[in-house]
Image 1 (cartoon, one colour):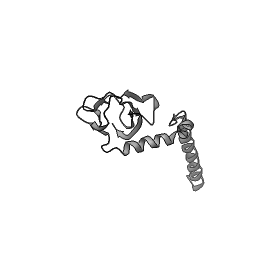
Image 2 (spheres, helix red, strand yellow; image 1 turned 30 degrees about the vertical axis):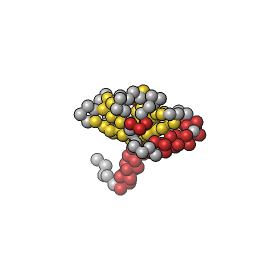
Image 3 (cartoon, one colour; image 1 turned 135 degrees about the vertical axis):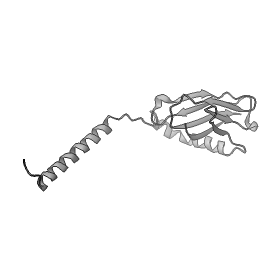
Image 4 (cartoon, helix red, strand yellow; image 1 turned 180 degrees about the vertical axis):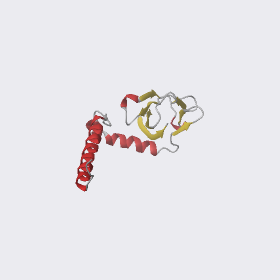
Length: 149
């Protein structure tokens, strides 16, 4: 049997390092990745309008409240009575950053008190970006929240 000397150790260490590096690189190449948006250039050009909508929502005297209700596993939206009008319409979007196939969109459907409940029990656990977009009296608003389900 041959003796294990320092030269053999160095060759063995370098060989293991190369194999580990190539394994990690091949694994990372095989991962799927998603762009934040397919039409990111156009969205970047129009982002000033989004900033204005967010600012309008922040300037409301009573803001829209977004809560996670644990007993019913749902998201509760509560709109202030001051902005409830017959012309109020909009959408609620759940955006999943790591998989756009899981994104969900709901029509804003408020009750008489300005509340809406959206069940999220079947959603995949993890981070979601919740966007509430609405129009009231020809003004557009956006409220964004990061939520964890």
